[in-house]
Amino acid sequence: MKPKTYITDEEIEAARRHGEESMRTEPHAVWARYDARRKTLVMKLRKGATVSIPVALLNELQGATARQLAEAKATEFGDTIEFEDFDMHISVKGLMRDLVGLTGAAAMLGSEGGKATSTAKATAARANGKRGGRPRKKTAA
Figure 1 (cartoon, rainbow, N blue to C red):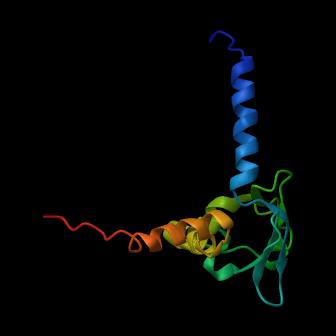
Figure 2 (figure 1 turned 180 degrees about the vertical axis):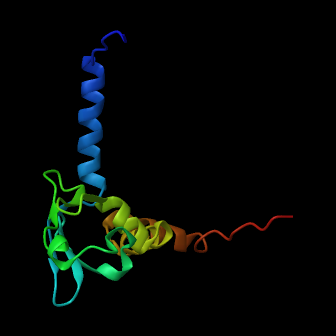
Protein backbone atom coordinates (compact mmCIF):
# COMPACT_ATOMS: atom_id res chain seq x y z
CA MET A 1 0.00 0.00 0.00
CA LYS A 2 1.37 3.40 -1.01
CA PRO A 3 1.91 5.94 1.75
CA LYS A 4 -0.31 9.01 1.64
CA THR A 5 1.19 12.07 0.03
CA TYR A 6 0.15 15.54 1.01
CA ILE A 7 0.13 18.68 -1.06
CA THR A 8 2.30 21.40 0.41
CA ASP A 9 1.46 25.08 0.64
CA GLU A 10 4.28 25.74 -1.83
CA GLU A 11 2.73 23.36 -4.38
CA ILE A 12 -0.66 25.02 -3.96
CA GLU A 13 0.89 28.45 -4.47
CA ALA A 14 2.80 27.24 -7.56
CA ALA A 15 -0.42 25.83 -9.03
CA ARG A 16 -2.25 29.11 -8.35
CA ARG A 17 0.50 31.11 -10.07
CA HIS A 18 0.46 28.70 -13.03
CA GLY A 19 -3.32 29.14 -13.38
CA GLU A 20 -3.05 32.93 -13.28
CA GLU A 21 -0.30 32.88 -15.92
CA SER A 22 -2.40 30.59 -18.11
CA MET A 23 -5.36 32.97 -17.91
CA ARG A 24 -3.14 35.87 -19.01
CA THR A 25 -1.24 34.18 -21.82
CA GLU A 26 -3.31 31.35 -23.28
CA PRO A 27 -6.57 31.40 -25.24
CA HIS A 28 -9.71 30.61 -23.24
CA ALA A 29 -13.23 30.21 -24.58
CA VAL A 30 -16.19 31.99 -22.98
CA TRP A 31 -18.62 29.82 -24.93
CA ALA A 32 -18.64 27.34 -27.79
CA ARG A 33 -21.41 26.08 -30.06
CA TYR A 34 -21.89 24.11 -33.24
CA ASP A 35 -23.30 25.99 -36.24
CA ALA A 36 -25.13 23.22 -38.11
CA ARG A 37 -25.92 25.40 -41.12
CA ARG A 38 -22.25 26.21 -41.73
CA LYS A 39 -20.93 22.96 -40.19
CA THR A 40 -18.50 24.90 -38.01
CA LEU A 41 -17.43 24.99 -34.39
CA VAL A 42 -17.76 28.57 -33.18
CA MET A 43 -15.94 29.83 -30.08
CA LYS A 44 -15.97 33.21 -28.39
CA LEU A 45 -12.58 33.80 -26.77
CA ARG A 46 -12.11 35.64 -23.50
CA LYS A 47 -10.23 38.50 -25.18
CA GLY A 48 -13.16 39.19 -27.51
CA ALA A 49 -12.33 37.32 -30.72
CA THR A 50 -14.80 34.89 -32.26
CA VAL A 51 -13.31 31.89 -34.06
CA SER A 52 -15.23 29.72 -36.53
CA ILE A 53 -13.61 26.43 -37.54
CA PRO A 54 -14.98 24.00 -40.14
CA VAL A 55 -15.59 20.70 -38.36
CA ALA A 56 -14.10 18.89 -41.37
CA LEU A 57 -10.68 20.24 -40.26
CA LEU A 58 -10.95 18.67 -36.82
CA ASN A 59 -9.90 15.02 -36.90
CA GLU A 60 -11.13 14.55 -33.33
CA LEU A 61 -14.71 15.24 -34.42
CA GLN A 62 -14.83 12.99 -37.47
CA GLY A 63 -17.71 10.57 -37.14
CA ALA A 64 -19.67 12.73 -34.70
CA THR A 65 -23.32 13.31 -35.51
CA ALA A 66 -24.86 16.79 -35.73
CA ARG A 67 -26.71 16.04 -32.51
CA GLN A 68 -23.46 15.17 -30.73
CA LEU A 69 -21.74 18.29 -32.10
CA ALA A 70 -24.66 20.43 -30.93
CA GLU A 71 -23.62 19.64 -27.34
CA ALA A 72 -20.38 21.65 -27.70
CA LYS A 73 -19.64 23.86 -24.73
CA ALA A 74 -16.70 25.57 -23.08
CA THR A 75 -15.65 24.17 -19.72
CA GLU A 76 -15.77 26.30 -16.56
CA PHE A 77 -12.24 27.69 -17.01
CA GLY A 78 -12.56 27.94 -20.79
CA ASP A 79 -9.43 25.95 -21.52
CA THR A 80 -11.33 23.06 -23.10
CA ILE A 81 -14.28 22.54 -25.44
CA GLU A 82 -16.24 19.48 -24.42
CA PHE A 83 -18.77 17.26 -26.14
CA GLU A 84 -20.27 15.19 -23.32
CA ASP A 85 -22.39 12.88 -25.47
CA PHE A 86 -19.41 12.21 -27.78
CA ASP A 87 -17.02 11.92 -24.78
CA MET A 88 -14.54 14.30 -26.40
CA HIS A 89 -12.54 17.15 -24.86
CA ILE A 90 -10.46 19.45 -27.05
CA SER A 91 -7.88 21.87 -25.65
CA VAL A 92 -8.51 25.44 -26.83
CA LYS A 93 -4.78 26.16 -26.74
CA GLY A 94 -4.00 23.02 -28.77
CA LEU A 95 -6.80 23.74 -31.22
CA MET A 96 -5.53 27.26 -31.89
CA ARG A 97 -1.93 26.02 -32.16
CA ASP A 98 -2.91 23.30 -34.65
CA LEU A 99 -4.96 25.68 -36.80
CA VAL A 100 -2.56 28.61 -36.90
CA GLY A 101 0.66 26.76 -36.19
CA LEU A 102 3.27 27.91 -33.69
CA THR A 103 5.22 29.93 -36.24
CA GLY A 104 2.03 31.46 -37.63
CA ALA A 105 0.83 32.47 -34.18
CA ALA A 106 4.23 33.92 -33.31
CA ALA A 107 4.33 35.85 -36.58
CA MET A 108 0.86 37.28 -35.98
CA LEU A 109 1.77 38.34 -32.45
CA GLY A 110 5.08 39.82 -33.57
CA SER A 111 3.35 41.72 -36.35
CA GLU A 112 0.95 43.24 -33.83
CA GLY A 113 3.83 44.16 -31.52
CA GLY A 114 5.68 45.85 -34.38
CA LYS A 115 2.68 48.12 -35.00
CA ALA A 116 2.79 49.46 -31.46
CA THR A 117 3.88 53.07 -31.04
CA SER A 118 5.17 54.79 -27.96
CA THR A 119 7.28 57.77 -26.97
CA ALA A 120 10.12 55.41 -26.03
CA LYS A 121 10.00 53.69 -29.43
CA ALA A 122 10.03 57.02 -31.30
CA THR A 123 12.95 58.29 -29.17
CA ALA A 124 14.95 55.12 -29.85
CA ALA A 125 14.28 55.36 -33.60
CA ARG A 126 15.50 58.99 -33.66
CA ALA A 127 18.64 58.07 -31.68
CA ASN A 128 19.39 55.22 -34.10
CA GLY A 129 18.88 57.60 -37.03
CA LYS A 130 21.46 60.03 -35.64
CA ARG A 131 23.98 57.19 -35.51
CA GLY A 132 23.41 56.15 -39.09
CA GLY A 133 20.31 54.00 -38.64
CA ARG A 134 19.85 50.45 -37.55
CA PRO A 135 23.14 48.58 -37.10
CA ARG A 136 24.05 46.31 -40.00
CA LYS A 137 23.80 42.56 -39.47
CA LYS A 138 27.17 40.92 -39.22
CA THR A 139 27.79 38.10 -41.67
CA ALA A 140 29.58 34.92 -40.64
CA ALA A 141 33.15 34.77 -41.81
